[in-house]
Length: 162
Image 1: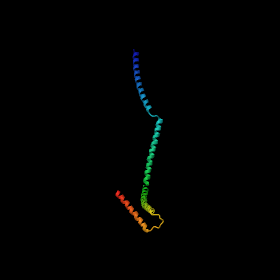
Image 2 (image 1 turned 60 degrees about the horizontal axis):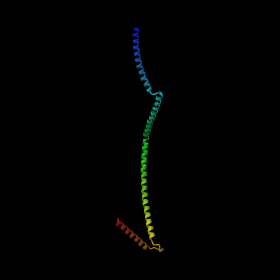
Image 3 (image 1 turned 60 degrees about the vertical axis):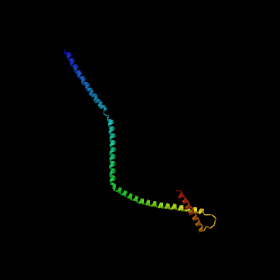
Image 4 (image 1 turned 90 degrees about the vertical axis):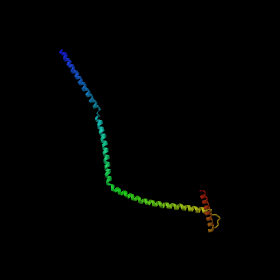
């Protein structure tokens, strides 16, 4: 009987040991899964290299902005002076341009008036009789008066029409 009791006790111990082993295996399995979820060292190195590149670009941008700010502050007075000079030159050149524009406008008006006068004179001369005789001043005055009369009649008809 003692053998049976020993057997039973050893069996209980094995059951306990199996339970313990099963718990340990479950714990090992969880740890193994957690380890498999960890990123591999090569990937970690690559990510750190990418991160270092990004941070170096950011720091270069920050340093560039600081340099530009210092340069601008250093050259602020000369920039302001150059700007005031440019504004003065612009106003001077603006006055020159306005004066030139006014001169051109008056020249163009005079030129157009001269062309119109020449056209009127040429039309008047074309209407004179071409008899080959010498035309006297009284004949010219009579032609001029006839033209003026005709123009006034035409303008009167137009004003009455309008």
